[in-house]
Image 1: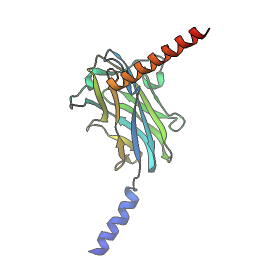
Image 2 (image 1 turned 120 degrees about the vertical axis):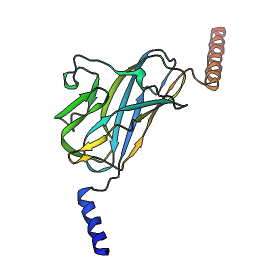
Image 3 (image 1 turned 30 degrees about the vertical axis):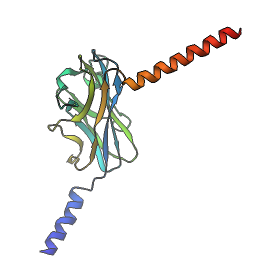
Image 4 (image 1 turned 90 degrees about the vertical axis):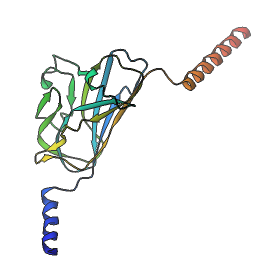
Length: 198
């Protein structure tokens, strides 16, 4: 029995190599002053992957601090000049994945024709979204449970850490506004002193 268990462990090492990696979702900008319609870039960065990475499938889940789902308020920005991405404002790291099959719809992503190792923090893909009016608050960008995530030639990459992105909608906190006010008063006072000296 022990020999069988050892054999299964050895086979697992060859069939499903150990994964030690991180996929980070970044929102740009990470804060907007109002919830009026605007644009948001969603970037994907990967690092420290033991196996090869060949692509990504992203289905967003965008929620506020109360857990309300706002995903339907976001649509991928069209860009008719971007023929590589079927006329949408999506870009990927074409240095690493020069040849790839893109898809844009409910899910967005690509399958590269070559799997590559990722060691240091590496930009993978950016999606430019338009959004309709959003209430003030903090929003989280995460993968929908229906999304595959990272893939390679052998199928789905599993076992890596996902760092969700966040962005804030709304006016700055009262403390920030107070500090800004003090700074402006100080500058005005300094300017008036200089005028009196002359």
